[in-house]
Each structure stands twice: as structure tokens, then as C-alpha cells.
Amino acid sequence: MLIVFSGLPGTGKTTIARELARQTRAVYLRIDVIEQAIRNAGVLAADVGTSGYGVANALALSHLQLGHTVIADCVNPVRESRSAWANVATQASVDVLDIQVICSDPQVHQRRVETRSGDIAGLVPPTWQSVLDHEYEAWDEAPWTLDTALLTVNQAVTLVIARLASTGLGNP
Image 1: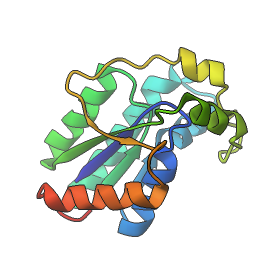
Image 2 (image 1 turned 90 degrees about the vertical axis):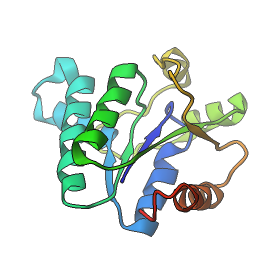
Image 3 (image 1 turned 90 degrees about the horizontal axis):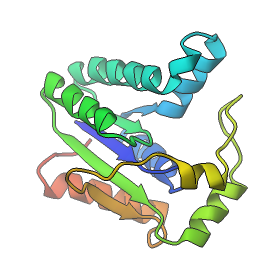
Image 4 (image 1 turned 60 degrees about the vertical axis):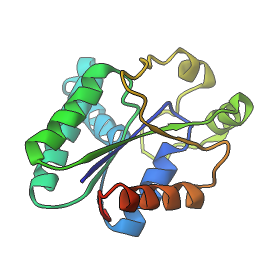
């Protein structure tokens, strides 16, 4: 099973995805970590986004082919990145659950962005303006959405686990 968390920075997707991975012992792939490793290596720096997603897709496929559940944590802002995750699931013959994480309260979202501290060495957290300016295409088909202005982390994780069970996708 491939679970892809998508959404703008500061919505809470990393917190939820990390906790789901901890509870389920799934493989956790965070695009920010991969992209920062690429920057630190000083290679492909002009194309970090595409390279980061390419590495994450390859890692996800290898883990899925071993029978592991994979949780991907990424902004996933464009159709191409969303299609790539769907292709990984198809290649691995597994189901994919797309989860979009939003924060419907702009003040809460802004506060989260402006008060967050970086947890990846060398990665500068985004500014509120960069979040507002971030490319994020509309989805062709609306994914299942969690609103962290209305849910705690534990409530969100509980909802994801219940969704997996109720849709027949099983436990991760």
C-alpha cells in the first residue's frame, strides 16, 4: 500500500504522516529530507524538486515491491508528481491512498508557518509569503482531505487508519 500525503507547507502533513508511520511501522519517505540531501551533495542542485521526487518514487517502488507499506510526505503540487505516485503504485501492483492535508484557518496556518523551527539540518523553513506563492495545481479528482484546523494529529491518524480499514485497503 502507498499512502501519499500532499499539501502546502505548514498544514500539518508531516506531523500526521510521521505519526501514522510510527504507529503502523510503515516506511516513511519525506521529500524535504531527500531534497536537502541532494542540495548538501552539491549535485543536480538546479533541479532539486524533480530529482527529489524521482529518488522518492524509486525508493517507494523498491519498498513496495518488498511488501512494505510506504508513506510519502510531500507537497505534491503538480499533476506530474501526482501521476508519478500513481505509476509507482501501478508498477508495484498496490493500492494508493491520496490524502490532501489542508488548514482551512489562514491565521492558524500562518502562525504554524511563522513559528515552526527547522528539523532538517541546512533546510530553511518557508516563509508565509513563499507558502502563499507556492505552485499548487487543482486536483483532477479531489483527493480525500484532512483539515488540521478542525482535527488534532491523533484524530487525523485515527481517521486515516479507519479509512484504510473501511475501504478494504487494509492496515498499513
